View (cartoon, helix red, strand yellow):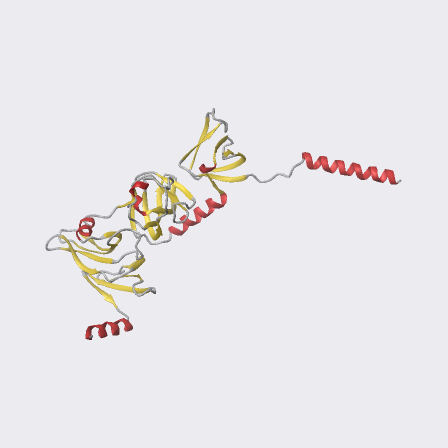
Length: 333
């Protein structure tokens, strides 16, 4: 009886082992996304190979297997092929990129521009930060937020046109941008010097004459131009000196339209600021109302809101009670 029981147990063990050997649980295939505008899939991971398909940024792929830095994937249409890990984004990374793009959609735009060179778009600021994708030249971008980071030591081949770096630069500007690409929009952090701003005329000439490096500009209102049309009046913010400064902007200028001379005139200047973006502009809902603009000022170390009011072509700073008293004491002193 004991021998029969042992034999029965042995049969069960053998059957269980065979079942586990030949009936693996079916795991859900890993998902990845194409990381570049055009990603070629190859017939094999070997040196001698042929292209079998081309996928595009954001295309969903199923990962079949990996070999060193080579990955075999299957497209949604069923085509299988090989590519490198650098051409793929993980599902988790792709989700974070989508969340960042959703976030920027609700942020106020501080400036508009386009990429001047081949540029890498990163998840966070920094040359060694994970790359979302590469942008070509002349890709339109909207700029939202700036961060100044230390310039890293040593070569960084992953950033294009690194020779453009000023030799004495200690910090460099990074901008959170939203790029308009053929697939839609994609957001991330871009090295500031790779962006050429599309500042409307004639603001670049006025800023250059004032030694102002423009960081952002804003339409405050529209006025009768005296010739049957209207002209926008602008607030321009910027800095003097090299990039990487602690303040997003240190100078403000308001340019208003002069009907008599048919040209823009400098109506307001403030160079006593350490401003942090964003600048919030509130325009009047009715004709003749006042426009306000405000931002966080770091001049005293701690953030404090500064607000200005504009009626037609006249701009004045709105001071709080404490600020008015301090200004009065300073004037009497």
